[in-house]
Length: 217
Image (cartoon, rainbow, N blue to C red; front, side):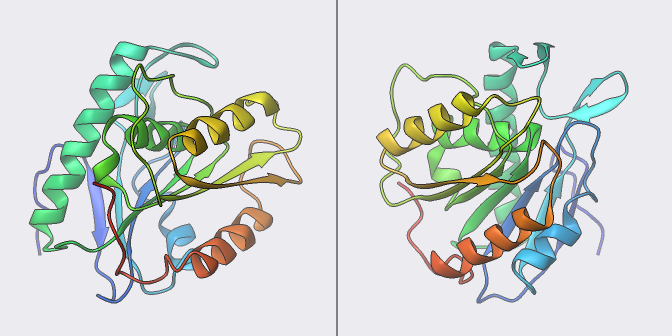
């Protein structure tokens, strides 16, 4: 089956209909293949939708521009967030996903755009596992995220994401009504085995390993 042109280079791997669809969002320098093994390890047999970021920074794919380390181009971030959300909606139709729960699994830059999607287009996601995220921006209007499960994995000695950033994001999403679990991982910015273990436990406890579940309105 040919991959449909949905505006992003991407991979889609079908999965069991009784499991969620994982939206895999790579970090800076990654691509559509990077997080496929992580997705399979988190929820074996789940469908996986993995786009490649369209912004290049010194030849490395990202999902949105930044002006400096930790300083985001907010106009570009908002535009790219809506573009990615439109891609997800198109993929839902193209791959016949119906109303199956779609959960973002994002690392670093991918986690930041996933958080931005929660704030700007909350109806797209049915949950999010955010690994090493920052606050993408503070919205003028806080969205209604009641009942939405969010797991944040922050590195205890992350040289790129200060601890207060992780705490601020957890508070921002929690104030919007999301059910947020902030976990401090023993390590820096890189993915670790503990991230996988925490993620697997979160999917199980929050019942996100099943396809059914209320999508945010």
